[in-house]
Image 1 (cartoon, rainbow, N blue to C red):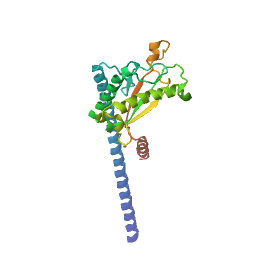
Image 2: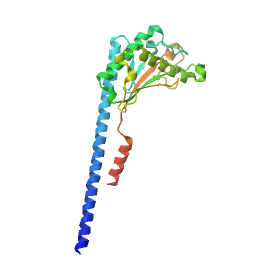
Image 3: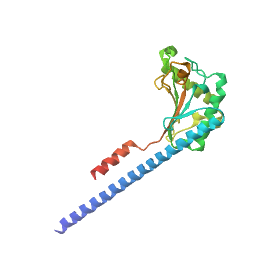
Image 4: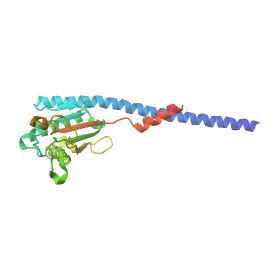
Length: 228
């Protein structure tokens, strides 16, 4: 009888230890997730403040940009880039303005410690809906990509070393900036029947994405809560 009681007590102790460990692991998961959610909320605020500051700083220099898509995108209009239809060249008279934009972005990211909270910053090229057949058949997609590359190369070649966007890294140690193109698929202005309407879509968007809470971890915690 004493042996059976000892085994029973031992089983109870083991189960209690396992339960305590499970509770400890669960608390660690929820604490980590709470921190991620708090950081995501903080990142939203920092991004908004940063983009508003970029816009205001550029406006003070006479350069107009638009904060779009719920405060996640700086849209650089064609007036600051001078893209002709079917061209990805930033003309000489627009280069100072384009460089000023890069400098202000670099300064804002540094001042707000943005690299800690940002996931990726996309330099996105866009075209109007005029059919383009150059660049070895890549069409408007290729044209938009080369527009983004043109701006990026200008920044890479001509910005001072202390304002080099190419040197910035995200929290994972990878380059913070990425370059892409979307052709005519994401128009800012649907009416492209006039030169002004079409020109509005020849633009570069700078999209700032932020670190988010781990969705897999969210699902795992939700599953554990459901099973309790």
